[in-house]
Amino acid sequence: MQMHPVKLYPSKALLKREDQLAWKMAGVAADKVAVERDVQAMIINRIIDNASVAIASVNRRPVVSARAMALGHPRKGGATIFGMPSAKGFSPEWAAWANGTAVRELDFHDTFLAADYSHPGDNIPPILAVAQTMEKSGKDLIRGLATGYELQIDLVRAICLHEHRIDHIAHLCPSAAAGIGTLLGLKQDVIFQAIQQALHVSVSTRQSRKGEISTWKAFAPAHAGKLAIEAADRAMRGEGAPSPIYEGEDSVIGWILSGRTEADKKGRAAAYEQVYYTVPLPGPGEAKRAIMDSYTKEHSAEYQSQALIDLAFRMREQVKDFNDIERIVIHTSHHTHYVIGTGANDPQKMDPKASRETLDHSIMYIFAVALQDGRWHHVDSYAPKRAGRADTVRLWHKIETTEDPEWTRKYHSRDPEELSFGGRVEIFMKDGSKLVDELGVANAHPNGARPFGREQYIQKFRTLTEGIISARESNRFLEVVQDLAKLPAGELHLLNVALPAGTLLEGKPGIF
Image (tube, rainbow, N blue to C red):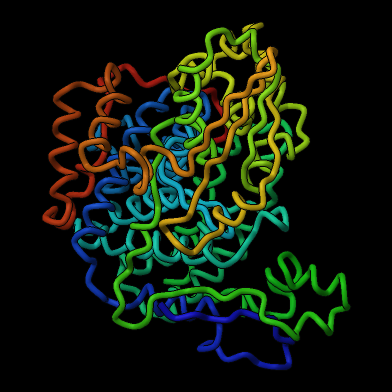
């Protein structure tokens, strides 16, 4: 990997494009390096993973709404939409909108955590939609997805968005645009403009994940994917973008991220003096392997809760009566404490009437239910009746989180063997006794007790789609996707998963 320092420059500096981060990212995307076999296999796993969670959510209200909007944009030979017959095509940006919403709705697909957060599987819907529309092959799709994963993960390793209250789709949109560039074999200068346009239009605040979390949490990455396709389209037509989008005087870093923070402290002139970020990128001819550092979810909940759910399952065996619990303290990382813990200071995270999206971001609720039930279900565990159960509410309100510097250090560790997203839990009993246990990574994590492999991805697909699609359709999809590298040009519509006729719900009328 090559390290690229990123700082601000005044307009009069006339920063050469070769020295700009977006140009270097475009160089990675344009590099025709081969995709290694284990990376190809993992890409297939994640396509299976995305299809699993998309079909499981296919008739949930946000997904129905997104699909209804997309159905207003049919296109002969276009992209497919999950649930619809594979012979029906739609405009790729709208197919990406519908499919991206379906993938994200349950918050149940892959993740990568470092300086910021990400669900790199969100790259799949827009890149696949363009691949289907432009009649690309399975190999082309694999190359495009390797780029999308690589660049989003590389940005997430280095540039923290959430400390400035910016949503993490600002890393997703440029990576998806770059992945589309790789897929289509675009030149570096075209991809460069697409990346810059994509970043410029995708910066939004983290209010979508704060307070009363709405269904926009599912729509946000789909919106980024839609914008990425549009940015690539404009760049292909010769249109330029605001530049330098990262390093410029009035750029994203200059007025939204750390450059703005430094200027507020020491004045605008001081903002040009230091390097703010150092972004790792593969060098020329170096394989794109970042997907191998990401991980999927076994449980339908925010990733930082995965290990703590597994820990709750383990600790419940030692609790004879939940009424005997005085209080529970979860010692964890800064991120977990302040995003899904009591450090967020969100009263909604303790509210039995909160939305599913909010409960998904409350480790207090999640730990209480996991401790009581010894299982986690993507529907039942969030049901209003389940959330409002009196004994659960009592237990839930006895739980608090606290930041432990050691867990924060391990959360940010560059050593993959030490990197941890869990915590240590203390359960204080009314009789004065105490139960203590800890877990660093989820069981399904590559370093966990039961790492996910192809067998587990397939099992997840079969479990989540059972009763929704036919056994024949399930078997057909799994056969096709596992032979992705051999899928010829124009056949990528076979990666769609269709529901039996008449089982898709219709959305409310709107403009489209």
